[in-house]
Amino acid sequence: MTDTQSTKSVQALFRPFTVGNLSLSNRIVMAPMTRQFSPDGVPGDHVAAYYRRRAENGVGLIVTEGTVINHPDASNQPNVPYIYGEAALKGWAHVVSEVHQVGGKIIPQIWHMGARGQVNDYTEAEIAELVQQFAHSAAAAKEAGFDGIELHGAHEYLIDQFFWAKTNTRTDRYGGDAVGRTRFAVEVIEACRAAVGPDFPIVFRFSQWKGSDYSAKLVETPEELASFLQPLVDAGVDVFHCSTRRFWQPEFEGSDLNLAGWTKKLTGKPTITVGSVGLDGEFMTLFKEGKGAGVSGIDGLIERLEQGEFDLVAIGRALLADPAWADKVQQGRQDELIAFSPEILKELY
Image 1 (cartoon, rainbow, N blue to C red):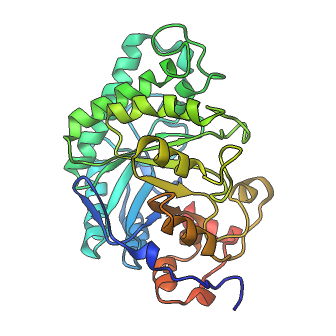
Image 2: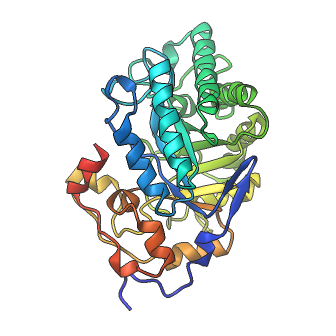
């Protein structure tokens, strides 16, 4: 038995899961990974084929790459897809159709990068416009046939810039303290909920770490985390996607629970864990050091899932390297899994 094989049953990964009107065949989620294969913001056949390959190989839920709302500051990257406009939405409808044809489920990650604007500079009128653009994109996603939406509130992008004290020093109702800094996210969630109705799942992704500071913390204790999360729950979040760099790391001293585990415990909401699943190196080494990662076993992950620490497992680079990752794991073919190398980036970018 090698370290790429599992000594535990993987059955827990392949139990069905339902939230709202979304029913999944298993607990495996394709994590959102930024791509630049959508010229002029329009996803084409290449994008549809990319997601279809993962769906037809057993992924329960696909979360797309970030899709940007209709706002001048939403993106500073060429060829990142839009989630607005007739051409882009037609392209996404085709992607959705391809995924559905092979039995998959798919939701878009709705995104504003905070690329140029600073949250302290936005007037309340501009904030109201941002909120409405998120809601317009949520409604457009439902109309295009998606199975839910994910709001990107992590990694120092716009929503997270409102969360983080370092980037939000506002003294009005959108700042002040940790709960006040959730106000923008709350208004976005509420507007999206009104746009899509009560049973259309809203996933919310958040993180402690930031792109500019891996050690950053929004909260330092479980009590602070509870206070931070409750307004988001009340606004209408169905599932929290808890972004960490290594899923096995405890979030707070005195407990083995990771961020997804604490979030589920404190809110009662389903959670998605993520962070170097199935690999022996965390993902930022790729970007900082140009390193790949080898295949690793998932016994620890399965044990946590069986214990109910979290409900769903998001997989990024492992699925990028090997579109058949889910089927191979289910069939006991772990020795056939493909390691992640920098060359795989040609698929991503």
